[in-house]
Length: 414
Image (cartoon, rainbow, N blue to C red):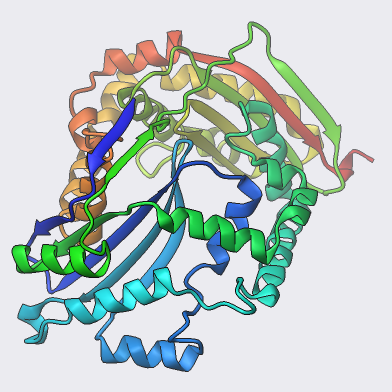
């Protein structure tokens, strides 16, 4: 599908909150993972005008800026460089500070702090080392190592485990000059701009056009690849068993959804996860810990692209029994009577969450942004309340396929 719209500023009038949120998003049209991993830690650190932390802090105080943040986000395989800023509304402050905050945003985005015409070499090196250290630290933990090995099993096309995580040597290609060139290319394209809050719509739109867009309305066009779903479902179960350096054994069982294709399937998968492990239904914990005292920890995890993982940490002598209890748990949650008893609880929780979302201005904004980008027009509560117990049972019985097992045998095997 193609996203193809003019980047006219979007003003969302909402007078129920005392704050406003400015959100600026630059689509990233092509990228290398290793560059984005580091760029996200380098951007908006300082600017040409605000070249010290003190100057930056004073500017925020003078502008009544409540907070600002930047990130590189992903929807499926589409990447976006984002800048968001929160400030008080005119009604609450008795003063309009939109223009000051737009000028601050423009300064931070278009005039980054440079040394010798590029990003700070010191900051880039520090960011690279921090990322390397975070990877090493994760793999030093038994749960982090287990997640990594299990994700490798269920991954497709490096969606769950990035190439950079698997090969840190790719970071040797990242330099200050290269990063700055990547950044310049990103911000040279037209951004999408949104403002939500109790604002003067006409005046706000004109200010954003003038300050952020240089009075140029441009076409924003890119191929969307938002919904990445599993496709590789083998007829046999792949088993990876290895001796680990940890004292704790890891026991993982993975399922993929056959013909995963839409948001409704994601909701169904979440229901299955909640039947196994949630406040309203903790079958997995009851079987493995309460009834049999076999595990230190156990949980069920899902990825939106169509996988369910049952993961436990235990002693090596319990491994076979845990797989037996996994099977028992899956059979138990497929019982129509049990589903009928739990689904209303999940639906009620979704209703409450939906009401709470209405009290968060950021949630209202990003729901709007998702719809604007063509990512989703559906809300979780609207979908789950239309799902019947029989549909859940059919999903478990006929669409969930066991695809792999990972066993990391701890040192107690000695």
